[in-house]
Amino acid sequence: MRQVLRKLAEDRASMLGLALILIVLLAAILAPFLSTHPGDVAEFHTEIRLSPPNADNWLGTDRMGSDIYSRLLFGARITLTIAVVAILVAVLIGVPIGLIAGYYEGLGSDILMRGSDVFLAVPQIVLAIAIAQTLGPSIENVILALSATYWPFWARLVYAETRSCKNETFVEAAIALGCSPWRVMVLHILPFISSSIIVRTTIGMGGTILTAATLGFLGLGPPPPTPEWGRTIAESREFLPMAWWYAAFPGLAIFIVVMGFNLLGDGLRDVLDPRLRRASSGK
Image (cartoon, rainbow, N blue to C red; front, side, top):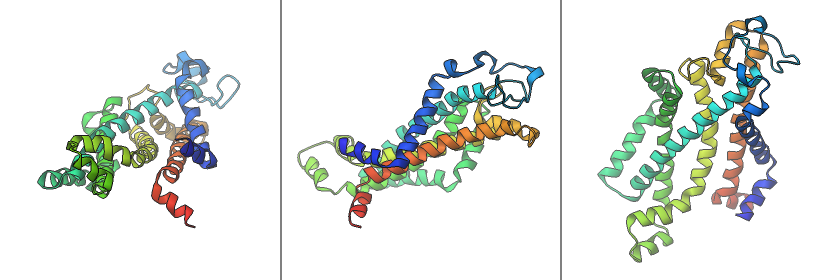
């Protein structure tokens, strides 16, 4: 673990991504203390609507006169909650399916993988829009839509990794010692492929946040006056380019958090993937 952390610390891009994620995470946790107008996030102040950035409203105000800086802080809570819960549900569904389908052979394995292929055959964003539109706009429905579209990626990844390591010596030794299939899968195969799952999860966080913002932009996310970043950008369209700050700062927030997870995921992939380490050491 110390070697992994040392290699990760030597990668400046990974450290930049980790720093960006920590900044956004701390901003979400400390939103009530960092916000300059914590009580005005969902209130109307028509006398100062669409005000440019100033000393009182650091990032300007929106069409309701609410402080955009404060709405971004509280919106970070919603965005991170959606991403974390959606990814967690997708992992809890996809990983067991991939393990079972990869370890066993036969009709059951084929049915599980063909089921994941059905979801993968439809473009992810199209399927998420269809599910969210059917269920209606809410945080819970966005999480459900994202989870339903993301679990096949983990199922396919774990399936391929399980099939590749099922004939490894340590797995055959565990079977020879009388370990049950569930013990082999959970205590031997799963730890061996955990690095791939961690990397895919980290990178998937960025894509989930971007997809959630897209659903909010299309009006399929949390309903107003929820300070969701994608919906904020959608509301700003009719005031562009005059009120440029209305769309610029929420867009910048999405860019920062997505880039942070992608940079950290790339660094973890280089450090945790043994094949990449062998390739780099052989150059």
